Image 1 (cartoon, rainbow, N blue to C red):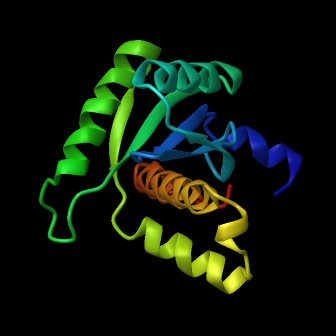
Image 2 (spheres, helix red, strand yellow):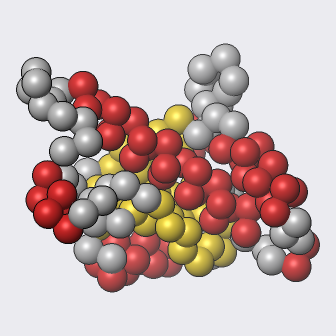
Length: 163
C-alpha cells in the first residue's frame, strides 16, 4: 500500500477484544485502522472489580473506541452457562468503561488457537495464558475481517476495492 492510499481507509479506531474465561482473560487490540489484531498480556482473574479496573486501564492506554467480548455459545448456537456469564460481564464492562461493547461468537477460537500453537511449536505449559492471548487475537481478527467485508459491500458502485 502506498502512502497516498492511506487516506482512502476509514479510521475506525482501536477495538479491544476479550476472550472471557473464569481463570484468565485473553486480550487483543487492533491497530487504529481496524485491520490487524495484536495480542496483549493475558489477565489472570482476581476479583470482578479488579478485573474491570484492569480492562478500563487497558482501554484507556490503547485509546480503544469499542470492545468485543467472546461469546462462548454452544456449537449448535444455544446459550450456555458460560455464555450467560460472558454476557453479564460484557454489561459490566459497558457500564464501567462507557464504550460500546459487543458480544462476538467465539466458537472454535480455542481450537484454532490450539492448532496454531501446535503448528508453531509453542509450549503452552511454559507460557500460561498463551492460548488465551492467541484466542483473543483470532476472535478480534474475525471481527475485523467481518467489518472489512461489510465496508467493502457498502462502497458506492464504481468505487475500486483497492483504492
